[in-house]
Length: 360
Ligand SMILES: Nc1ncnc2c1ncn2[C@@H]1O[C@H](COP(=O)(O)OS(=O)(=O)O)[C@@H](OP(=O)(O)O)[C@H]1O
Image (cartoon, rainbow, N blue to C red; front, side, top):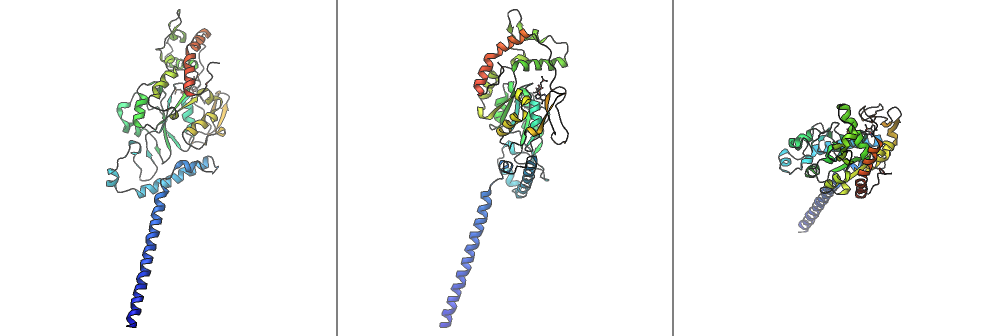
């Protein structure tokens, strides 16, 4: 009797110990799972904007960590059937390479204009940033090639790692009526950047480019006016039309809030490239990696150049077609154009909240 009571106590004690350790294991398992889930996706911004003051090194290290993260995600990817069943937004539908070197994404940021504003300089400078990947040529997707479809467009893009920003520049988007609606249909979150320049110098620069291709065109002065004697400006001439920034911006504001549009001063991009690049990096949510250390002023070219271009250790200035000598234009015509643009410029300063100083 006594013996069987002892046995019963033993059995109960053993059962209690087993139950206890089972509960402890369950608790441990719960804690571990909870921890993994709450870690969530690795955010690039946190990685690149950490306190490591390593400049380029920090950015590259961040990209390496991101590559590891990408590899981990590929390893953890659900079976193909499960993934296919998920509704994937077009932006993230790029194929992931089995080697983990990235995938093509639709751009999250675009340089939309203006023609002759300094768009090439801005893109070349931005490409130095380790978290920006950009296509070199102008895709002209939202104006000329829209019928080719988003898959065609995505295919043009360079591969990116998680957290890197894909960009392209096509300066004609700013003046293309359909562009904002189309870009918004791709993604309402797209960030757009407009490099603006004094509309009078911009018009002359535009004309200089056309003249270099077709030396027989009429003079700038004669193209400017519908009727020179009455002084009526020909606003249908694209060189003039493009500079009515307030009008084009109105169209963009139908689709994008002002916070998603950044205006870069084409003049300051030349006089203080690092300053303007600082604003652009902030706008894109990137660490300010491109600083004045990256530029030098090339006296022969008369423009700022990169000490090291993207993927090279050599200094790099833009090509011969950037920074052309402009023909002399009749000062009276220049003055007439200044008078013409002044009210539009004032409206544009008001709309953007930035004074560009073209009317001093
Ligand atoms: N760093 C640097 N180097 C050379 N050129 C520079 C630079 N920064 C701005 N710019 C100005 O860029 C003007 C050309 O603008 P875009 O690149 O937008 O032209 S285009 O629309 O792509 O044809 C070009 O216009 P032009 O001077 O009339 O040729 C330049 O004034």
